[in-house]
Length: 74
Image (tube, rainbow, N blue to C red; front, top):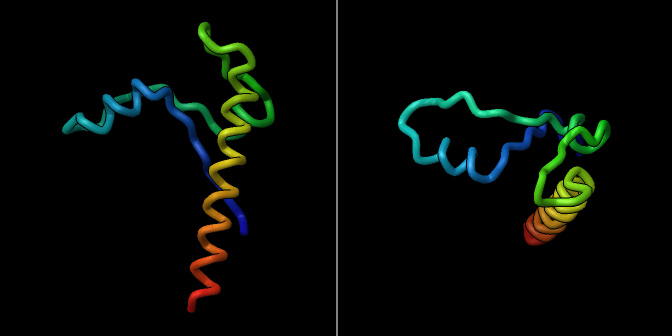
């Protein structure tokens, strides 16, 4: 499995984009910026890049497990 082109957006920006009728120019972070370069920082969260990376790994693990179960059922 190969996962490419992961991008991240702050929750508030994402929610604003979802309700908007037009495409808004909201700041996004690439997976490289967050996971490898650790360029993401938040005033309210210490080690924000590490926390986002951990949550990403957990979510990808969940997706892989769900896919595995799905393929076993067929």
